[in-house]
Amino acid sequence: MQTETYSPNNDIAEIDRQEGMHQVWMLAFSLSILQIGFGIVTPIFPYYIVALGVGGTELGVLAASFAITRILLAGPFGGLSDKVGRRPVLLGSMIGFAFANVVYAFASNIIVMILARALEGAVSAGFFPAANAFVSDMTVPENRGTAMGYLSMGNMVGFIIGPTIGGVLAQFLGIRLPFIVAAVITLGTFMAILVLVSEPKHRTAAYGDRPKISVRKVISNNTKAYSALGIAMFANMFAMGILEVAFVLDAVERFGITPIEIGIFFGVLGLVMIVGNVAFGKISDTSGRKWLIVAGSVVGTISLLFFLVSGDTVDFIVAGSVLAIAISMRGPTIQALIADLTDKEHYGSIMGMFGAISNGAYVVSPLLGGVLYDMYNTSTEGLIVAAAASFAGAIVGAIGLPSYIPKLLKDDESPLSHSNTPETL
Image 1 (cartoon, rainbow, N blue to C red):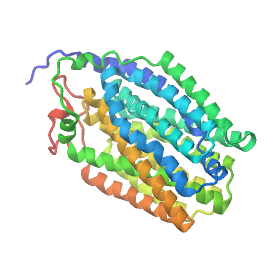
Image 2 (cartoon, rainbow, N blue to C red):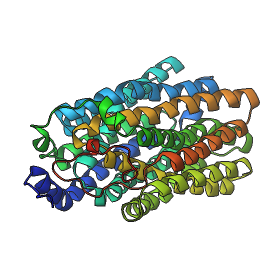
Image 3 (cartoon, helix red, strand yellow):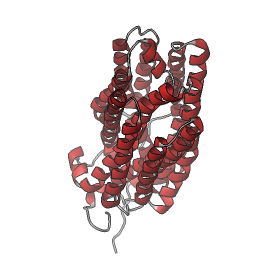
């Protein structure tokens, strides 16, 4: 029988259990404030585009410019958070995000809008990998899915409130004021993080004497699992890009829905995801990650096909609610499984890499959705492509995702020490 030796990791695991969730809740609260600012502008972009005299392709470029800069910088900023800490990267991101919204408010042409959107993507590239890595630092495998669910819940609280506020402000006070409001709310997020969130104190202590291992080595030890997770994450975000560009334009042009109705639509999606993220996060902790991700991909496919036969706002909301359930099944579960497979020393870098994959989907899908809409004057083709991507994610997940991950790693072990054997994969 192997004798266990003492390691700081044993103490870290116990501290994570007791203190980690408190820090996660604080970060989730801060993220909800940020997402209120981010969500305020969601119902406004189609009308801003019309006011500037451009069309669906330009709206797709606008949306994609955000993702392009996040793709380029998510990995480097994630790695930076591994080196200098999570909190400095989170705080710096907030300042840049607020500034980008001020630029939006005074933009007079589409070029300035695209540049502001690219700046917003650049600074936000630091926030989300650092936030996910922070949660990974402060949790252990038994509660990691739940914690990722809480973080996603904070994200969705803002996603509900933001579009609703934005729709009302745009309807009655014009399309520029919401950007100023978003900047102010973002500065509120900065203060919340400054006051409520502290750097994980034990993040580097346990790894100070460990030989450095490259990110490439981390990936190579579980190539099959990481590849399947990347495809699942791509498919999850791809649907949202199609909805926000092709479907929203289609709904405005063909069905005449108003900014308030768009706000309600995204608000209902967010409400469903608030409940679903926490519920499915807990389920993934107790019942496993793999088949929840696969089932979410199948449900996502069904929801996108339902959009094809929807003809009014009620139908849209029902289809969107089903999609929200699918996203809730996949989102926090994917993040938790990534953390399960990854050494804490590399959380920021790996989360940044997957953030780049997610944003890659958000480059391709808005551009493709906008072009297809301009070609066919309908969102049908874009929705079919999104459904196919979601179903492909289900197939790849069923084949490539690991069915079992050890619940706790001993102090002398890491995910790097497990090869792709039937026991771990």
